Amino acid sequence: MSCIFCKIASAEIPAKVIFEGESTIAFLDIKPINLGHTLVIPKSHYESLSEIPYELIGKMAEVGKKIAEAMKNTVALKCEGINFHLADGRAAGQEISHLHLHIIPRFAGDGFGLKIPPHYGQITEKEISFIHSKLISQLGEK
Image (cartoon, rainbow, N blue to C red; front, side, top):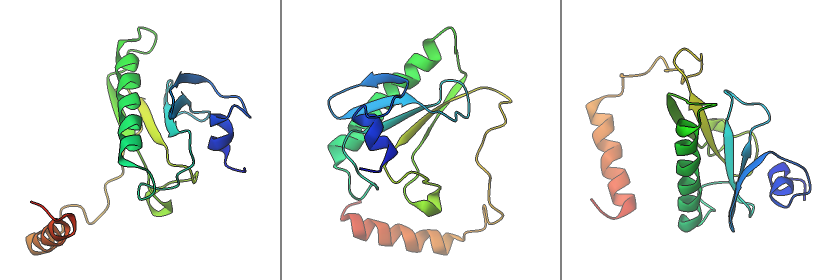
């Protein structure tokens, strides 16, 4: 097993674990964006959203919500906002090939944020309508 997150989940390597459940584990990021930055991972190895069962991704979100609430209520942290971030695939910025959810505490002026691309706002209504119909067709519902 060469996956670093699998090794953390199986306690082969140490981590600052803040929550552990039957199917998930949450630990502090070793290169945090802000103090308290936490990763929530499934204990089993899944590389992408297409592989993970719906129930398990739901459990990850549930754990993330509990951690976000704790971040907002912890006097030592008292963050002003939270980012949930899950990158699925290299093009989305996924660096570790084990699906993980970032819970990032945010503070006004912390310097972190999403970069808006040059094409922002330039997608046409026709393009939006086209993809809308294709996605509805793929999902099989409206």
